[in-house]
Every structure is written in C-alpha cells, then in structure tokens.
Amino acid sequence: MKIGLIIILYLTDFVLLSTAFAQNPVRTPWVAVRNRNNLNVRIDISTLRNIRNDDILVWSLETHKEPIVIDDISKRVFRTKTRFLINKALLKYSILEVVYYDSLNAVIKNFNYSNSVKMTPGTYSYPVLKNNIVEDILLKCIEYIRIKN
Image 1 (spheres, one colour):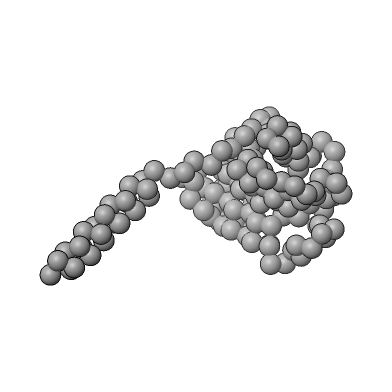
Image 2: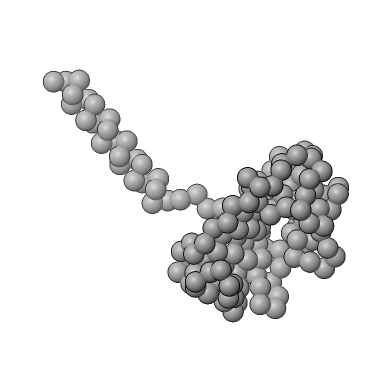
C-alpha cells in the first residue's frame, strides 16, 4: 500500500514538473543579421559556441515584411527558417532544411534535404556569393565565433 502511494506521488510530481517546464520553453538566442528591404534575418547563435573547424551549422530565421508566395506551398509565407552547413574556408554551403510558417507561426511546409546532402568534407551545393544573404549570415557567424572563442 505504501509503495503504491509513493509511486503515485512520484508520478504526480513528474507530471506537475513536466507541465511546468512545458509552459516555460527555453528561448533560442537569435541575433540580427540583416534588416532591410522586405526581409529581417536572424541566426540562432546557440549552435555557434564550440566551432573548431571550418564547417558552421546554423539556423537562420527570415521574417518577411510582406508575405511571399511560393508555387508549391498553399498559403502565403510569413517566416522561413533555414538550416545551413557553411564552410568558411571554401566559401561554399548546403541547405539542410527549410521550414515555412504562416501568419500564425504554424508550419506550412517542411523540406529536409539532410539525407540527400553528403556531410563529407568538401561536398557543398552552392558557392557563397558576394552581397548575398548567405554571405551576411557567414560573416555574422564568424564575428560571433571570434567573440565567444
């Protein structure tokens, strides 16, 4: 009887603690990269703390001041979250995942390319072009890495 009561108390505590933590999600530290024209871009710096080689894995979050229309997506896109793998030495990158959000911040569509992108050194899909948003993201990543390391 006592063992049953103790188990019920532990389960109740677990449920209450789980609920409390679920209501207070950990905030992701986003840092501004660009805010001009029709686009506000931020990066998640939480993944940049212990970068030791030339590969940078980073999420970007684009907030569109005017929603965009994409052919394969049924709703207008208000925010886009993209996970990049960028090589700072080679100045090349790959897109690993893209998530599109509506006006209520609900996911409209999610594309995961990480299975099709080989994660071997030197294999990247695109060059980092001058005056491009990916260049801005890379420069902000490098700036943050230098400050924190």
